[in-house]
Length: 102
Image 1 (cartoon, one colour):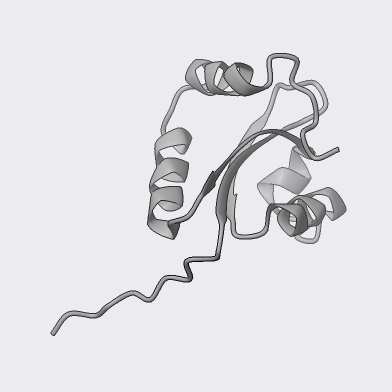
Image 2 (cartoon, rainbow, N blue to C red):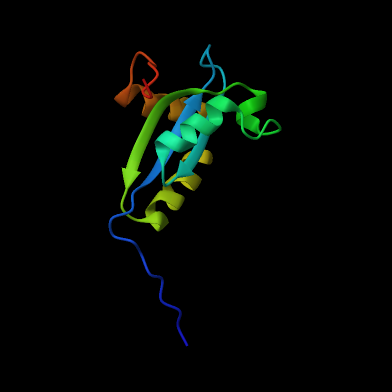
């Protein structure tokens, strides 16, 4: 018996990278609502989280996906990269490391 996964074709998924103010710490995450998720990071809704501890509240890169599976695979792949490769990815889209949430 196989289980079918029902996908909402109108739903969007995002993989994103946050940086701290000095761009020395990077956080990679996934969400289906990037505006809400960024706001949660900024408000530190989970004060014990990595992003709260290291103050990663600047959105420096994101990519949108239609498939949650693709988004999860991309997040895992990026999390496995060395910092230098993540920086290259960020700078292809955002060479000045501006906050893209503004």
